[in-house]
Image (cartoon, rainbow, N blue to C red; front, side, top):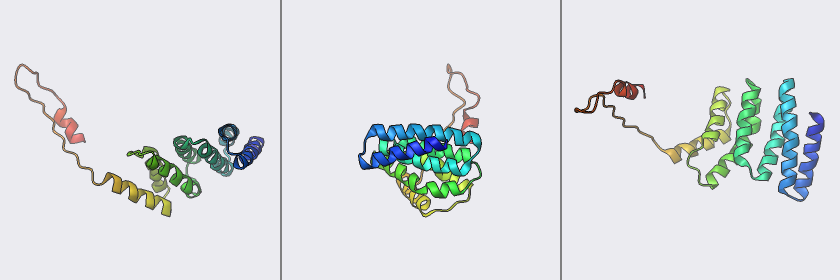
Length: 168
Protein backbone atom coordinates (compact mmCIF):
# COMPACT_ATOMS: atom_id res chain seq x y z
CA UNK A 1 0.00 0.00 0.00
CA UNK A 2 2.83 2.40 0.84
CA UNK A 3 4.48 1.79 -2.54
CA UNK A 4 1.20 2.53 -4.32
CA UNK A 5 0.91 5.74 -2.28
CA UNK A 6 4.46 6.78 -3.20
CA UNK A 7 3.85 6.12 -6.89
CA UNK A 8 0.54 8.00 -6.76
CA UNK A 9 2.16 10.99 -5.05
CA UNK A 10 4.95 11.08 -7.68
CA UNK A 11 2.34 11.01 -10.43
CA UNK A 12 0.50 13.87 -8.72
CA UNK A 13 3.72 15.87 -8.58
CA UNK A 14 4.12 15.35 -12.33
CA UNK A 15 0.48 16.31 -12.88
CA UNK A 16 1.00 19.52 -10.91
CA UNK A 17 3.90 20.46 -13.22
CA UNK A 18 1.99 19.56 -16.39
CA UNK A 19 -1.70 18.94 -15.70
CA UNK A 20 -2.97 16.07 -17.79
CA UNK A 21 -5.98 13.82 -17.32
CA UNK A 22 -3.97 10.60 -17.77
CA UNK A 23 -1.53 11.54 -14.99
CA UNK A 24 -4.34 12.26 -12.56
CA UNK A 25 -6.08 9.07 -13.65
CA UNK A 26 -2.93 6.95 -13.16
CA UNK A 27 -2.43 8.53 -9.72
CA UNK A 28 -6.05 7.77 -8.84
CA UNK A 29 -5.50 4.12 -9.84
CA UNK A 30 -2.53 3.89 -7.48
CA UNK A 31 -4.46 5.52 -4.65
CA UNK A 32 -7.40 3.16 -5.26
CA UNK A 33 -5.15 0.13 -4.75
CA UNK A 34 -3.57 1.68 -1.65
CA UNK A 35 -7.03 2.60 -0.33
CA UNK A 36 -8.21 -1.00 -0.69
CA UNK A 37 -5.10 -2.35 1.06
CA UNK A 38 -5.21 0.16 3.92
CA UNK A 39 -8.90 -0.57 4.40
CA UNK A 40 -8.32 -4.34 4.57
CA UNK A 41 -5.46 -3.79 7.06
CA UNK A 42 -7.63 -1.52 9.22
CA UNK A 43 -5.16 1.38 9.04
CA UNK A 44 -7.45 4.37 9.55
CA UNK A 45 -4.86 7.15 9.55
CA UNK A 46 -3.25 5.86 6.35
CA UNK A 47 -6.67 5.30 4.77
CA UNK A 48 -7.60 8.92 5.50
CA UNK A 49 -4.33 10.24 4.06
CA UNK A 50 -4.77 8.07 0.97
CA UNK A 51 -8.33 9.34 0.51
CA UNK A 52 -7.16 12.95 0.64
CA UNK A 53 -4.69 12.26 -2.17
CA UNK A 54 -7.27 10.30 -4.13
CA UNK A 55 -9.73 13.19 -3.88
CA UNK A 56 -7.11 15.55 -5.28
CA UNK A 57 -6.51 13.17 -8.18
CA UNK A 58 -10.23 12.84 -8.87
CA UNK A 59 -10.62 16.63 -8.77
CA UNK A 60 -7.73 16.94 -11.23
CA UNK A 61 -9.59 14.53 -13.52
CA UNK A 62 -12.72 16.64 -13.20
CA UNK A 63 -14.53 13.71 -11.56
CA UNK A 64 -15.91 15.67 -8.64
CA UNK A 65 -19.04 13.60 -8.13
CA UNK A 66 -16.79 10.52 -7.82
CA UNK A 67 -14.71 12.50 -5.33
CA UNK A 68 -17.80 13.11 -3.23
CA UNK A 69 -18.70 9.40 -3.39
CA UNK A 70 -15.16 8.57 -2.27
CA UNK A 71 -15.51 10.90 0.71
CA UNK A 72 -18.75 9.19 1.69
CA UNK A 73 -17.27 5.68 1.27
CA UNK A 74 -14.24 6.60 3.35
CA UNK A 75 -16.40 7.98 6.14
CA UNK A 76 -18.35 4.71 6.16
CA UNK A 77 -15.12 2.70 6.25
CA UNK A 78 -13.63 4.72 9.09
CA UNK A 79 -16.65 4.34 11.35
CA UNK A 80 -16.26 6.29 14.59
CA UNK A 81 -13.28 8.32 13.43
CA UNK A 82 -14.51 11.95 13.63
CA UNK A 83 -11.15 13.44 12.58
CA UNK A 84 -11.90 12.18 9.09
CA UNK A 85 -14.85 14.52 8.72
CA UNK A 86 -12.84 17.53 9.85
CA UNK A 87 -9.94 16.77 7.53
CA UNK A 88 -12.23 16.14 4.56
CA UNK A 89 -14.30 19.31 5.07
CA UNK A 90 -12.48 21.43 2.46
CA UNK A 91 -12.88 18.62 -0.06
CA UNK A 92 -16.61 18.45 0.65
CA UNK A 93 -16.81 22.13 -0.20
CA UNK A 94 -15.05 21.54 -3.53
CA UNK A 95 -17.53 18.86 -4.54
CA UNK A 96 -20.48 20.95 -3.37
CA UNK A 97 -19.33 23.97 -5.36
CA UNK A 98 -18.87 21.79 -8.42
CA UNK A 99 -22.43 20.49 -8.11
CA UNK A 100 -23.63 24.05 -7.67
CA UNK A 101 -21.69 25.34 -10.70
CA UNK A 102 -23.18 22.59 -12.86
CA UNK A 103 -26.61 23.81 -11.86
CA UNK A 104 -27.53 20.79 -9.73
CA UNK A 105 -30.52 21.48 -7.53
CA UNK A 106 -30.29 18.32 -5.46
CA UNK A 107 -27.19 17.64 -3.38
CA UNK A 108 -27.72 14.09 -2.12
CA UNK A 109 -24.02 13.23 -1.92
CA UNK A 110 -23.07 16.42 -0.13
CA UNK A 111 -26.02 16.04 2.25
CA UNK A 112 -25.02 12.45 3.04
CA UNK A 113 -21.57 13.64 4.14
CA UNK A 114 -23.15 16.41 6.22
CA UNK A 115 -25.39 13.83 7.93
CA UNK A 116 -22.33 11.79 8.83
CA UNK A 117 -20.74 14.90 10.31
CA UNK A 118 -23.84 15.35 12.49
CA UNK A 119 -23.67 11.70 13.51
CA UNK A 120 -20.06 12.18 14.65
CA UNK A 121 -21.08 15.47 16.35
CA UNK A 122 -18.40 17.28 14.36
CA UNK A 123 -18.86 20.98 13.80
CA UNK A 124 -16.98 22.73 11.03
CA UNK A 125 -17.58 26.16 9.47
CA UNK A 126 -17.68 24.61 5.99
CA UNK A 127 -20.55 22.33 7.01
CA UNK A 128 -22.58 25.19 8.49
CA UNK A 129 -22.02 27.31 5.38
CA UNK A 130 -23.09 24.55 2.99
CA UNK A 131 -26.13 23.59 5.10
CA UNK A 132 -27.27 27.21 5.11
CA UNK A 133 -26.89 27.49 1.33
CA UNK A 134 -28.75 24.24 0.70
CA UNK A 135 -31.55 25.33 3.04
CA UNK A 136 -31.81 28.63 1.14
CA UNK A 137 -31.95 26.75 -2.18
CA UNK A 138 -34.61 24.33 -0.98
CA UNK A 139 -36.52 26.78 1.18
CA UNK A 140 -39.38 25.34 3.15
CA UNK A 141 -40.79 22.25 1.56
CA UNK A 142 -44.44 21.48 2.22
CA UNK A 143 -46.38 18.41 1.23
CA UNK A 144 -50.09 18.12 0.62
CA UNK A 145 -51.12 14.50 0.18
CA UNK A 146 -54.54 13.05 -0.49
CA UNK A 147 -55.41 9.39 -0.14
CA UNK A 148 -58.69 8.08 -1.50
CA UNK A 149 -59.86 4.57 -0.71
CA UNK A 150 -63.48 4.75 -1.87
CA UNK A 151 -64.38 5.39 -5.49
CA UNK A 152 -67.71 5.48 -7.32
CA UNK A 153 -68.69 2.19 -9.02
CA UNK A 154 -67.51 0.57 -11.23
CA UNK A 155 -64.03 1.44 -9.83
CA UNK A 156 -63.24 -0.94 -6.94
CA UNK A 157 -62.28 0.44 -3.52
CA UNK A 158 -58.64 0.49 -2.54
CA UNK A 159 -57.35 -0.70 0.82
CA UNK A 160 -54.28 1.30 1.82
CA UNK A 161 -54.28 4.79 0.27
CA UNK A 162 -55.31 6.49 3.51
CA UNK A 163 -52.77 4.44 5.47
CA UNK A 164 -50.03 5.40 3.00
CA UNK A 165 -50.83 9.09 3.48
CA UNK A 166 -50.82 8.70 7.26
CA UNK A 167 -47.43 7.00 7.10
CA UNK A 168 -45.97 9.91 5.10
